[in-house]
Length: 189
Image: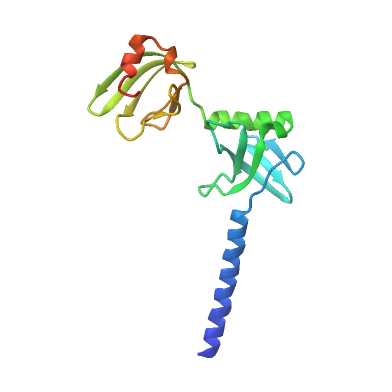
């Protein structure tokens, strides 16, 4: 019985050590710079990373402050469901121009947000709003759920709208719309 207890303590101790090591790794803040990492484009159009002794065949790129500092504090993560953070880039301007451009392309794909330039119509039926708008990418129709935060006020004049499919649309300044368009937006401002 005593040997079994010693064996259990030994096994538990090694699990505890592994968990401590993993926790330290997760909590460590690593800054990625042009001096300690290299980003490359993959054949499939993604981005890979060489950082220290490690090579990541693919990484995901996220903005930590997408509205207030879109080009600063860029989080580089593993592309799996856990999205463990590899490191942070303080500013894209700290990287070589070609690598910063590559990461900006990835960010534009992840944060694709057409800007609504004209409101043609908005219909409200059965708890849903049906938008017919013009964006900087052309005409678009989408639907939002009236409740649940589909329209977020970012500033007094700036709105972010998320449709039922998770697509985002932005209105940078509601003051640029005509009185008729603002009346259609009345439910949301």
